[in-house]
Length: 304
Image 1 (spheres, one colour):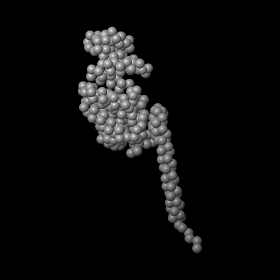
Image 2 (cartoon, rainbow, N blue to C red):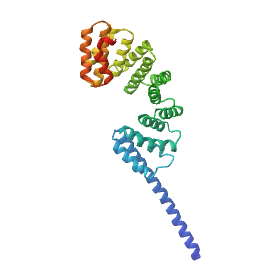
Image 3 (cartoon, helix red, strand yellow):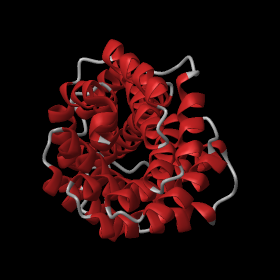
Image 4 (cartoon, rainbow, N blue to C red):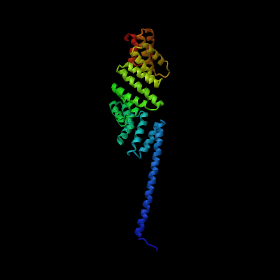
């Protein structure tokens, strides 16, 4: 039996059919766009990992044109900020990372990025607040503690700076051995020693610098700090030996050479080797225009 549908009902059925097709098509388009965005995000992240920072920023900018305020886009803003930090574009990095934290208050890496930008912009107290926020969210990240330590050291809050390095060291020592872990442990121990020098805890500082050098024997800054600790402890012969070894290295900047020659000279003064000290001070005057270093060098053993 042939059933004749009223024309209106036929039109409704036809439209429903189109609606179903359009709906399915929309789902397919959305899935395609999501897949494409995932691929583009991965490409941007790869550029960041490859240290192609300008290209990475351009890639993140392209992604943010279509997705700048969603819950997930905070990662794009944070990674963009990290790339800007590497290019020393601190104001732009601050803006990008702040956008990330506004979209996700629990974004620990974005808070750390924000802290780094603020630190390099000379806003140490604001940077400290940002690093504390990162630590509150994720206290298991040693980098956050090391960054907090740097700000605390600059603010002359040395007891708190030491506490921060101890947290970092404990976290790092619980991790599997890697080159990165060794570098970070060398930095952490050296930072602890620096604060201990400021507090005149010279013996503890020497022990910290020795620890640093067990992880990175060629760590020049720790070598120099170790020599300074030896000088302050009155171990002048060891201090002289340390600075002699340092000035023989090829990779020193003129300023690093000048500081090493200066401490070698002052150590020589302490054991009455004035002629050798004078030669060391002459090296300082040839290497640096720093007014304070030149003043000490010109005074020679007379101010020791």
